[in-house]
Length: 340
Image 1 (cartoon, rainbow, N blue to C red):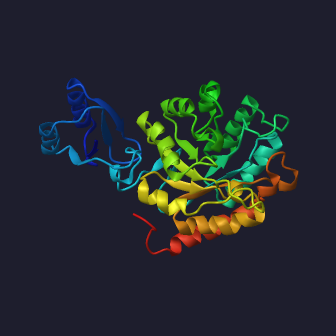
Image 2: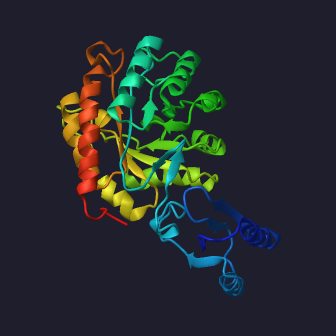
Image 3: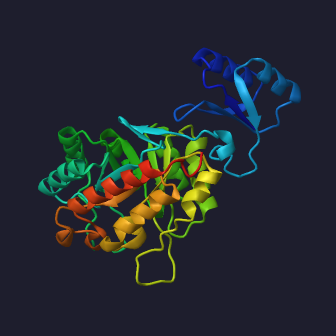
């Protein structure tokens, strides 16, 4: 059962309700960051008399029981939608947010040049991998902590909040010291121990869809984060494995409006991994925003042909600037949002 609290509920009134539930022996999860507070009452059923008393307090606006297995992430739990704030950037509102940067931090010169270029192109956050999961053990796996230090320097220089990936539980505390937003990659979407510990940092989380995951599995992965008390979650569609060898993955834009119907969490799209081809990134970026995405995650390199990782799908800063211009124009031209 989900208790949706009134948007104007004072913190002490919310705490009084929580205290009452806990005294009565109920296990509760409370989410407060991305919108009006939600209290999930776990375990045994709540007696009708208790529910009636909640409603009479004026604190509880509505009691809902979502039918989906991902009840905290379900649209019914927060119909107005969740907005996730990363630094001064808000993801989940009308204007699309563009996160851009190199797939991997290769050197100080490469990162700082790219960071300054993506800022000038209009991006709102900087992405970059310090620890990289690679299919081959012989490929470049990133600079580790040195890469994190360089990302922090790039943030200081450009003012852009930093998004970077966490690969395993041993790295969480280290990465959280440097990053403004923690990314869970496609390969780790169902690493539930990692999800719980990342949630516990309280940092915003970018959750990529597994490349063989259904939408329900993806939302259940998000539910692990929410059930651990962290509703600062942004979903990222990055393509699923298909049968067509001409592109790296199949970018599933069906998932964008579907997720917006089923969940209150913001959803963005990664057309770089979703296509694997830089010439497809601009049109699929526009298609993603037209489908209702709240933003984009794009790989950018000042010299894509020399990139150590994923150069074929990386675009240059000039292309990014044109994408930013066009997606903002597209969003402004829409008289109504795709979904409330």
